[in-house]
Length: 70
Image (cartoon, rainbow, N blue to C red; front, side):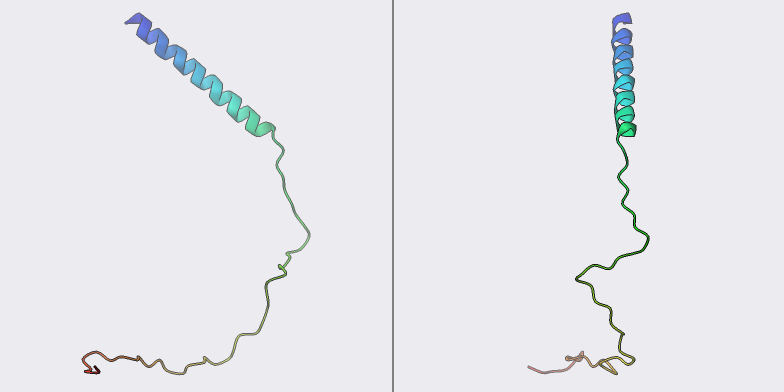
């Protein structure tokens, strides 16, 4: 029983050590931040004024329920 407890404790120590190394390496990497003074719009985007009225005034369904078109 004591050997099992010792193995479990050893595994816990190794796991904590691996976690510490992973966190330390992550913090050592420099953060890459790209910033410019203003927002840029991509070359493929277009800006246009939306229409003031919709293209279709009232929607009309092509098929009505209960109709016997067939």
